[in-house]
Length: 146
Image (cartoon, rainbow, N blue to C red; front, side, top):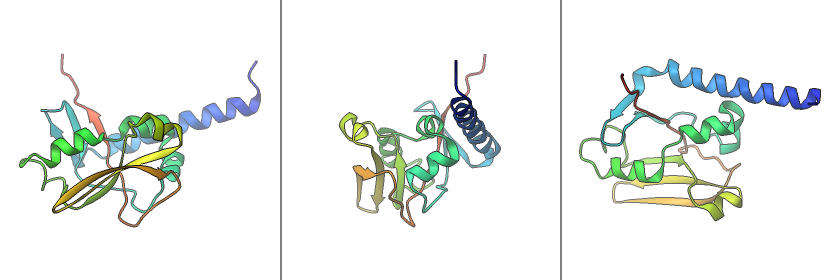
């Protein structure tokens, strides 16, 4: 039998997930269709100067992780003449999915950083670090029409 505290925790987590879905769905004007990758991505970064931990409080861990772009997706878009300027990928600092197993086990989050002549994936930042330029943008799968 679940304790009351466990039920409250589960309900709070579900509420965070629903709030996250609503925020993402309400912001439809900012999505850019990337048919080559089968995704849509937000055109601009938001929630700047928030740590990963703060974003988990807002969006919920599962929902946040599901919505973050991967390094490979951003690198593909950065190498594309069609999307690099539209997404400002020559001057960006944003959270991405942590795909490095060892770093993830150690509680580190990943960041994508790009300037006019370079880009980098940084996998060893702790989750409570923030930065005035650091933000997040979300991706979602393209809706398939039947």
